Image (cartoon, rainbow, N blue to C red; front, side, top):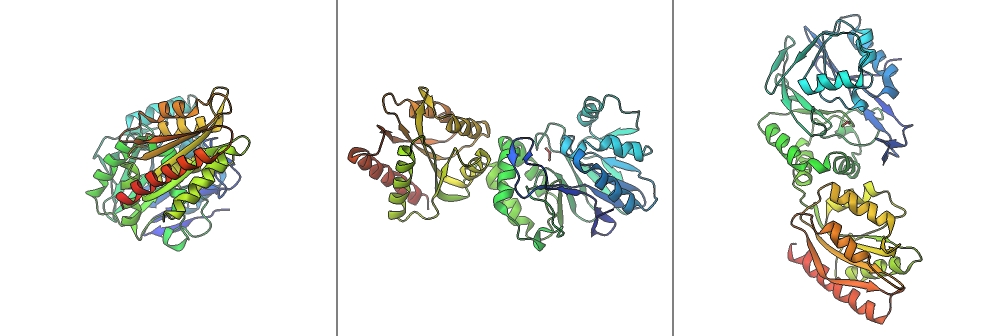
Length: 400
Ligand code: FEO
């Protein structure tokens, strides 16, 4: 049975939600599910904007059929070929073989890669600034390479000021009836986790898209995941400006620790407590063995100051901490102040190896005070934790 939403004149959301998937991209936990958004425009010509994940093909096609109400589908616009949006394309083309696929040359190539057996279909390859007249509406295509794949583009409806923004401005979380962000208790934490982990590496390219978008009058943002934005768009754009520039959102401290028998965890908690004594608010402490790296990567994008505390393990970094640090480096984090603590009962080497991963991060300061715990915190290490707390608190307050 169809489940669609009219979101503007002659514009319908025809997507679907998935609450069964445990790991988005087989990597990221999505406890609140995810939506795969597709849109249909019913102007003099009809157009589908993006398909959906294979898991929701039936819902998608029932939705499209309902909105079309027997009309032909003139165009299928593909903004992004990643399978969470394009896996159902073959079925859509089987049901509406007359539709002309409108996308760019890179995406057309990917269609052949993903669907080598697909029957011939008509297509139009568009470039930056090309337009498509639907009747009342004119659509303009804007290339957005690496936001989040090289073929990604966005589509701008200049008639009504609607930007179909592909992955940009998406979020984790299923759609639960309310299609507009202003009707929901929108969870910016999940939007940040989505952006930082999925697109975060490509801040330069995201900033380039934001620059192009700043020249457009935007009344509505229609992303490929999560709710549609029609109010407070500037607030969300402001977050994207910070995230894409790798600027911390908050002058705040996050401590991530990897601990085998509790000595390193104890040091992390003592440091947090000493920071709180110095007036630092909103401190967050994470056990890297418990919290999925995607949440800590997201926190690293939020906080100005980060402490990594790791046991030494097999003469290296405690493995979950090593994974986290490589994730953070892979996502291009920049402009942070970092402090390091390691622990080793006989040969502590973790801090040196953590520094080797973190030192290449641009405009990042690693505090001179490094603490080496010998098994458990003692009076000498407690003094060093005092010193580290002073340094971090001074640094946080300097920029406040
Ligand atoms: Fe939601 Fe890059 O796909």
